[in-house]
Length: 187
Image (cartoon, rainbow, N blue to C red; front, side):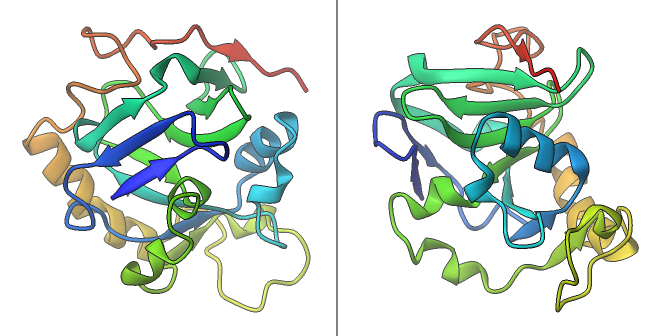
C-alpha cells in the first residue's frame, strides 16, 4: 500500500498492509480537532469533527521519497507526536515513541488511490463522542469504549510481542528522539 502527501513530494509504503491493521477508526477528541484546526487542515475532519486514521506498525512504514519534508508537531510538551509533510501541509500520522502504533491519516491513502480504503470496509470503531460536533447519525463511544479496546488490543499486543515499534521512520535509532524537532502548537 502506498501513501502520499497532497502534492506527492512525500511518499511512503506499508510493507504488510492490510494484514497488519485492525481497520478504519475515527477519533472525535478535542486534541485531534485542535491539531487539524491549528495546522489549518480542518478539511481532514468529517462533518462531526472526526479524524479517520488507519493503524499500522511503525516498523511496516517505509519512506520512499521526501523524508526531509516530515514535520513534527505536539499540542503540549507531553502530547502525542503528530506528523505532516511540510511541503504541502498534509497530515500524515500520529505516533507515540517506542509504542507499536502509527495512526495514518485516511487522506494520505486517498492521495494515491481514492478507493484504497474500500478493502477495509466501514469504520470499525469511533471514539471520544463526548467531543463530537452536532448530532452524528452513527454511534460513537463517549470515551475510549469497549468496542475500541476489543478492536485494537490484539493489534497492540502483537506489536509489543514482535517489537513492531522498532526501526520507525519517525524516530532516530534510539526509538525516542523524533527525526524532526517537535513544534509545540499554541492555542
